[in-house]
Amino acid sequence: MNPHLRKYMDAGFDSVEGWCDHRLFHIIDKLNDVQGGLRTRAGVLEIGVHHGKFFILLNQLTEESDESAALDLFAEQDLNIDGSGCGNLQAFERNLSLYDKHKGKNVRILSSDSTSLSPSLFASTRFRFISIDGGHTPEHTLNDLALAADWVHPQGVVVVDDILNYHWLGVFEGVIRFLLTTPTLVPFAIGNNKLFLCRLSYYSRYFHEISASDLKTKIVSLLGRQLVAL
Image 1 (cartoon, rainbow, N blue to C red):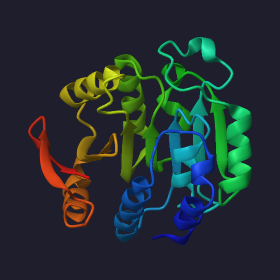
Image 2 (image 1 turned 90 degrees about the vertical axis):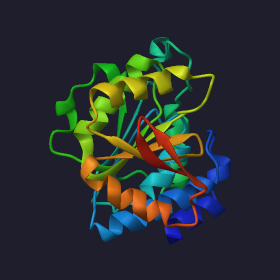
Image 3 (image 1 turned 30 degrees about the vertical axis):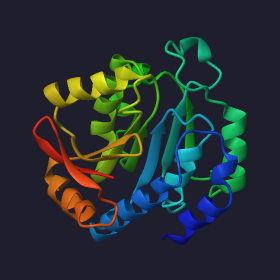
Image 4 (image 1 turned 180 degrees about the vertical axis):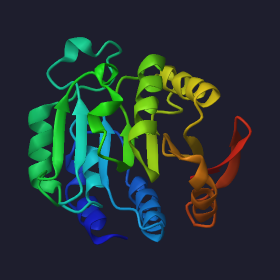
């Protein structure tokens, strides 16, 4: 495993409030290996960082020269119309200072509702990992996937949280609407309550690399496309 991932997994991850488990380290580590073979370098972005548990995991794989970004409503919780998460800027900044390999120096923090953002916000920046864990309505999910399709590195991966959480069916609805109407990203794996997508050009590479790994439990199908169940 990447040593920076290992360090965070062993010391820090369990101290940060959030809802993801240790198996994600192995999944992200494998995806990082695949991206290394593609010679992909770029920062990471998360929409809905909460206290930073998963964002810090992703940012362990960046260099300080890679621009990363963290987006949340933070203090504007009156805009949190579905009550999904409760981002805390002070807790996030504290966790960055304690557990992030760069102490947050490469992170641009934005306090905003993602539905108010323009694709031009990151016109000159691309991210190799984008995590979508913001508003859990169908509209937020559809909006955030459209933004991710514009912002993801051509060889990058988009990760949608709560894909099969029955408390947040808006996420699943938004993903299906996106896939049926704007298939600029396609899923290649699902597991640990997350859906993993990439550009169509790299679907075969990610699917075959992940399906050949010990992460695979079985092959499943979604809208006629094969996915690796993790």
